[in-house]
Length: 459
Image (cartoon, rainbow, N blue to C red; front, side, top):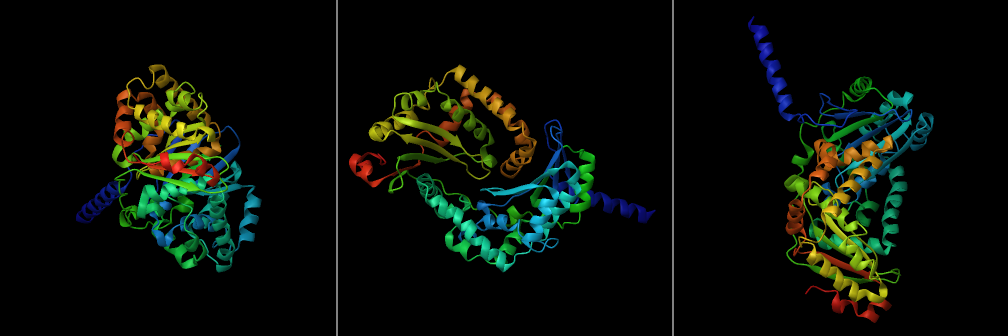
C-alpha cells in the first residue's frame, strides 16, 4: 500500500515536472497535428494529399543571432556540412547515392533566427526518409577533407554577394544598424572565420543547439498523422534531451537602440544604377507582437499602386521602384524602405522620400478602401503561398523559430483585425521621427555630378 502510494506520488511529480517544461497546447489550422515527444522534440504532421509526395523538415533555433564574431557564418557552414557525411553514410558519395535511391529533392537554409533542412520524396519512402534525416541531424561527421572543399563554397557565396551593389549597400547598413552585434543579424559570416573553420568548431555549434528540445520536426504531404507520429517517435525518440534550454543558457544580448540617424554614401564603379535604403530598428515579437502584424499591413498599403508613396515617387518619375518591408523577428526586426531613384532626379527623389516619411503619421495618409484592399491582398497571398504542400513546413517553421505556432495559425486572421490605431502605434513607436540608417550606393561619376553627400545627410 505504501509502495503503491509512493510510486503514485513519484509519477505525479514526474508528470508535473514534464508539464512545467513542456510547450503549452497550440492552435493549428485544419489538417495540422502537433505532438511533443518525451525528449522534447516537437512534431507537426500536415495531412495534404494534393500530390503523392511527402516532405520532412527539421528546423533548429540557430542562425546568425546565436553567433558572436568568433563563430560568424558557421551556422551557414554547418548547414552545408549537413549534406556531406554522417554515421550511416560516412562520405558524401554514399550520402548522395542514398538521396538518389530515395528520389529525393533536398535543401537547407540559414537565416537570422532559423536553420532548416528538408527532403521531399515519394510518400512510400517516409520511413526511410525519416531514418535518413535522423542520421544526418544527430550523427554528422566533420571530415577535414570535406570542410576543405566546402569552406570556399560558403565563402564564395559571400564573395558573389560583394560583387552586387545592392548587397554592398545592405551590408553597410547592417553594420551601422546593429553596431557591435552585427554578426547576430548577418548569416553570411566573416571571411576569415569561414575560411579557418575546423571540425571542432562545428561540434561546438552542434553541442550548443542541436537537441530535440530546440528543434521542430515537420512531416507534410500524403501521410496519416497517427502513422507519422509513430514513425517519428520510434526513430527520433532516443535522441537525448539537452537538459537545458539553449537560448536561455546562451542568451541573445540586447540590441542597442540607435541614438541618432546615420547617413552614408558608398561609391562603387559597379553601381550602374543608384540605390537608396532607409532602415529602422522595428518591433520584436517578444515585446510587441501586435506591431509585427500592423507593420505588414502598412507595408502592403504603401505598396499599392494607388498609395501616396507610389504616386509621389513612381508615378511622377522620381523612382522606378519603392518598397517598404518589415522582417518578423523574435529579437528586433528591421524595417527597410528601398528605392531605385531616377539618376537624373536624385535630390528631388530624396526630398520627396523624406516628405512622404513625415506624412506617414497623417490620419488621411491612406483611405479605408486601401486598408481593406491591403488586408485582401494579404489574405490572397496566404492562400497562394499554401498551395504547394512542400513549402508548408518551411513557412511554419520560420514562425515557430521567430514567433510561435499560434502566431502562425492566427496571422492571417489577425491581419484582418488591424485598425488605424494599430498602424499609428506602430509608426509612432518605430518609424516616425525615429533614428534610422540611410545609405546610398552610387557610381563615383554620378556622385560627383550631383554632389550626393551635400544633400544626402542628416539634418
